[in-house]
View 1 (spheres, rainbow, N blue to C red):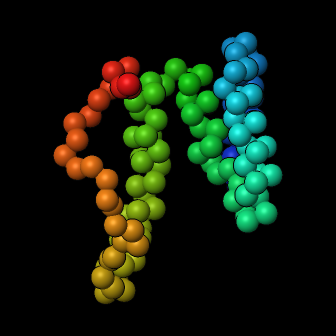
View 2 (view 1 turned 135 degrees about the horizontal axis):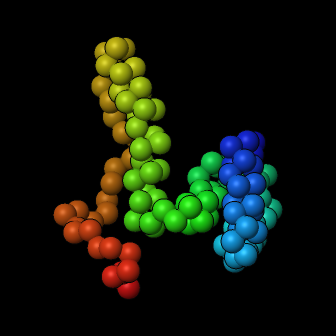
Length: 114
């Protein structure tokens, strides 16, 4: 099902885009959403609360480098709750995925990335 929080953020993104006279990002987002729903909506995959958040953050003048930390902060309480549940149930916590990407990579600010 379509995340009702995504509908709310989409509305904020539309209003902020109109208010700032810059429809570029919202138009791109809506087109991606349209294609996504057409192609994978039948599998139950729809935009979630984070889909339009970048557009909202952009118009709130939040630096791009903070988008991911804001995403992570919004998830910390849920992650901690899961860990507490695992500890209380005396179950070993085992992630379902194994990371196979680069390690020990230094952070590069967005403006310096190629």
